[in-house]
Amino acid sequence: MQAFHCQALPIDVHFGVGHLQKIQEILRPYAYQRILIITTAGQQAAGERLLAQIQDMAVAVYPHAVMHVPKEVADQAIQDVQRLGVDCCLALGGGSAIGLAKAIALETHLPIIAIPTTYAGSEMTAVYGITENQLKTTGKAAQVLPKVVIYDPELTLNLPTEISACSGMNAMAHAVEALYAQDKNPIVSLMALEAITQLAQALPEIVQAPHNMQAREHALYGAWLAGVCLGSVGMAIHHKICHSLGGRYQLPHAQTHAIVLAYSVYYNRHADIAAMNQLAAALNVSDREQLGLAIYQLNQRLNIPMALKDLGLPETAPAQVARIICDSPYYNPREYDYAELEALLTKAYWGQAPI
Image (cartoon, rainbow, N blue to C red; front, side, top):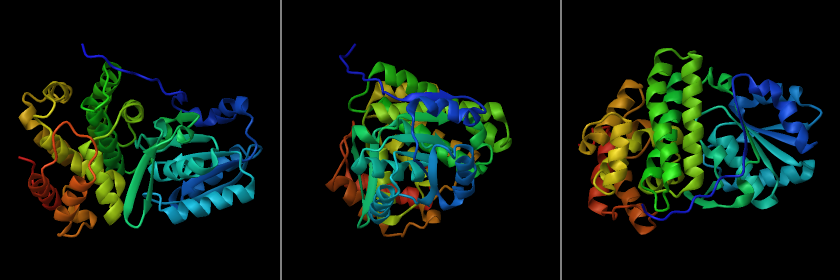
């Protein structure tokens, strides 16, 4: 066995159906008095309901979170929390709300409470991302790791099936990349394989029956594990591709991850044989050569958009993104090959199978 380092994340996690109703009990030991509830515009009503529930602890709803955390949005939010005298940011929503809370914490060191309503996973990480001049910059900082995370599967019941499927595949991508991360370890790999198995089983059930609470529980459990993976080890080619696409072209985050996963796995199918064999077993695929196709076919069953062009990507983008990846690469177990990346991204652009 190879030597490894494993550091547990210091997060207070509460998981269970109906847990949002226990929020005052969960938060009381922390003695926060001026919580700012951060949401997107679409989640403002949910934020207002939560404000009414914890009004003795909170000051306002801040419905200004948007995808990819533009720097100007983060800068304005930092000014607003200082003006309001906020002592804690509560992110209610998916990656956009949690991302803005992290951008605030990066500069102010304010604590974060995260209540996820999607399967994004960023609530379990010290990873932040900010977009400026069409370039998304990511990093790690201890102060952006949420102090408390509350998982309530009821909050995902009204998540549309397409978003549920895309968000779930986004979570699966976190787990997949943990298997071949530069700093992988056996504990995180066990969690990654469990996450992949849970998500692969639960997501098709959710598409067939969106209000299946048991499937929602298993999907959120898998997303939690995938988030732990993302927060514990590094990223590789898949996240580099998606960050490049999202930062430069403002593509929707979860849908982009869902589409790209099949192609990044195909690119790495012979790079870390042990990891790919584990992934094949988790997905019930007999041959790692077929892994990319298997994930592509899973996306088809989930009715996920199959082509990057359908998300608004211009036809010239594959060549440009391949160059960005090669010029500023993340770690990957296989070297980056510009020509092959361009060809693979072109297939992803058209929605062609990765074979």
